[in-house]
Amino acid sequence: MQVAGRHCSAELERYGQCVASNPTDWQQSCHNLKVQLAQCTSTHPAIRHIRLSCSSEFSAFEACLKKHPGNVLRCQDFIQAFVSCAERVDMTSGTVLAGQS
Image 1 (cartoon, rainbow, N blue to C red):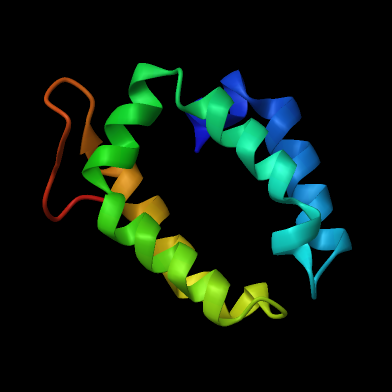
Image 2: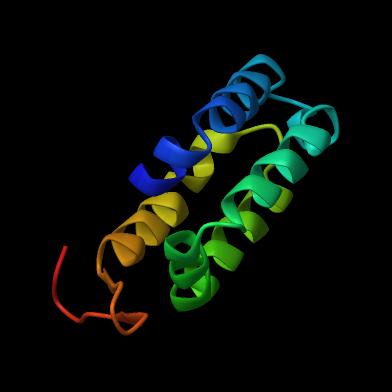
């Protein structure tokens, strides 16, 4: 998340503001900003490592958002699981280190 914030802070900020401002229809209202953020983050090797290593956690988070489009707070556990996984990614090998947080 820190890497995304450093490299894509403007995109992350715009997307976050859009989601917060559109709690019931953020998926539609913020789609273009989500695409811009994804394009930005997909160009950084560290973020690509994290997305590959923690793809199941990220997919679970996205599924939760789709299931509860009007209530992002219901997905806190899923985003926390993704963040926890991302923090454990060994950037030299691209693997997730067990038991670290």
